[in-house]
Image 1 (cartoon, rainbow, N blue to C red):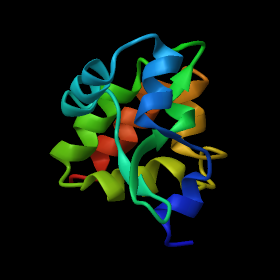
Image 2: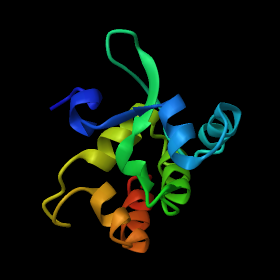
Image 3: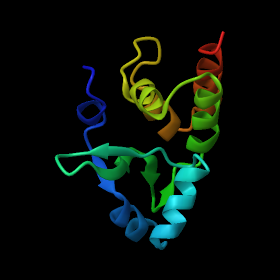
Length: 117
């Protein structure tokens, strides 16, 4: 599956992210600039959105920022990073995002760092 929008599946528009995190929209934009969140334009209107899986228990998944930075350092675009995070990996099992959500950030960051070599 090549379409990132379909691969991720469950998206949240930025205003919904702001509401879920009890922040204003400017603060959400800051989270995106700081790579604490990765956005993508989705739907017919190409609205700015983030994967719903990036939020957990009313907060941004804390392991995402460092992982996103490692992927960017490896030369991945935001779209490529999303594709990597949400693609099934037979060696995990599951997807890297699922491993991050279950607290396995060290393993996922190691894998992300290996992409640069």
